[in-house]
Length: 382
Image: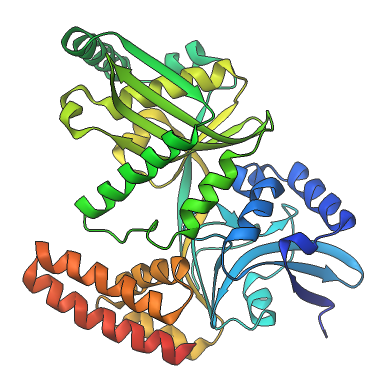
């Protein structure tokens, strides 16, 4: 290449010892890459299961300058194992001069969708908006963490905990590797929540559930799934599946029993998760990007992350101006992430429109038209 940068797409399993050593060295040197989703052990599993998974090996001359995990959907590129990988992006040094758009062009992509992009040197614009990752620092222990939170918030949660125990029996909490049965229960609960809130069911395609089950088989002490479970009496009132790598834990799939909503079971569970994580040597608990009120109760803004669509062809950017298309495109890209084949994509889009129509008949009809338009444009682009 005239700029000295070459990009080779390989399967994760094809990374050799030199590439893995370079990956680990880059990750250790760049604090932005501490998320469990940048752990090669996660990508080894995801690379076996996620359709279209690959790693872009980026070289400047003979030297490896970085990597980009991705999955291909026609001319669209997404993070590897999207929509499951909450953090993703370039594995490179913090002062890298690599240009993400140039890398995407060399991969033959016409567009790329990101939701939690970590990319040194990337700036807001070109289809990307910036948010902050939200994280709880528990490196100094749980008492030190509590001292930095709102006294009123903590007092309210202690009151709700006492009420839960009074009304429903002794409260117990566990934070361990999930059993297969508990993992199935979490997935079923999450699917029920997605249906209840009229969202696309990301577990309907099968491989996303298989990814969680394969991760649950990891027997390594410093890597794998951990399940937080809050019980009152004999009932499970809240649970959350998370992913741990080293001293980082990422909160991933929460569920709670709506019959116990008055006790704020999700908040009670999160506080206990932070306590247990600190006791087990976790230094940072990630909540994902965004400034939702519940995240601000527990966490502080950390590094910037990017969300949006990068177009490698300037003429394609104009499509983002169509009313409502950006949001529909984002939702359809989520369906494409789970369903790499056209039949599955059409089935997923149809189920989404059906769910919307049942709740909002007039809106659903408009969404159906929009999804049809979005699908047509996507297929034309691909």
